[in-house]
Length: 348
Image 1: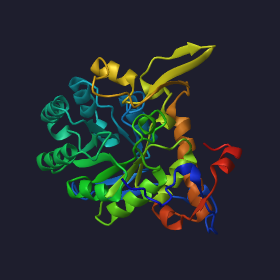
Image 2: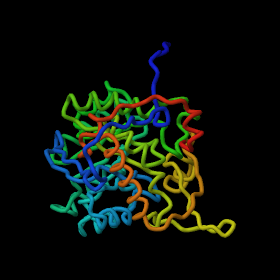
Image 3: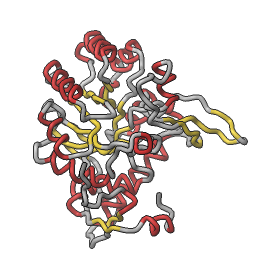
């Protein structure tokens, strides 16, 4: 046993210090990024926001809304769609704004092989290889197998929170490493298992490791407001994945419920009792639920939420003089603040 003495930081622990700027308007900021992925060599241009592969968020409807938005945002599709529906979605141009989520079990692998075979040239080009614990050797071996079998696919893999494991995943075939453990708004891993890592520090450390190997990182979890998204980019994240901030909209493909005259939707972690009973029939005897279920207010179309998120990113860039989103991390200086101060000013 040992204790690391370095102080680690979450989003509420810091603010971005403003700097002199020659920008006259938020409209002067280009918040799109251009990437060439290390292993697949595919290119990407767009606002690097990804909707999480969660029920009510990672939906076909969300991907279509993102396509309509036109900013190149993408969705990590929830992995429980039937093969027939996935084939239909991808045949109708679904690949541009989506990542195909692939789990580690044999059933998921067989379904992915079937979808690829049926789609041919229309097959998914981007894979989100998703597991809660990216530190298990089986996951690394599985990633290597997927990379060998599909050398032309762009692979995002995770989750991890440390530099050495980020390097391991990139060298094993990941183009993008997903960063975050126990950070999500409906994730209870920190309480149930006592495991986690403060998200801001995780991004800083993993981005440093990834960029040295020409890899990329995606911050997954912890963002509860547009300012947190800006902090993630400032810390070095190339992509930012969010769940709760995109939940509760028309695109959730979920049934509305009435409570005290107010419309609400259920939102839950994918390791929660709700998700496991829905998709697996029950919670396996060998595991505990690591997610919770909440009811959140109905928020209408996702368009307004996207405008708020993207506007917040532009505003952050303007405050530090970053003409392009790419420049934000170079222009960012974080100021440590107390949680008490953040609470006074209404932050989480």
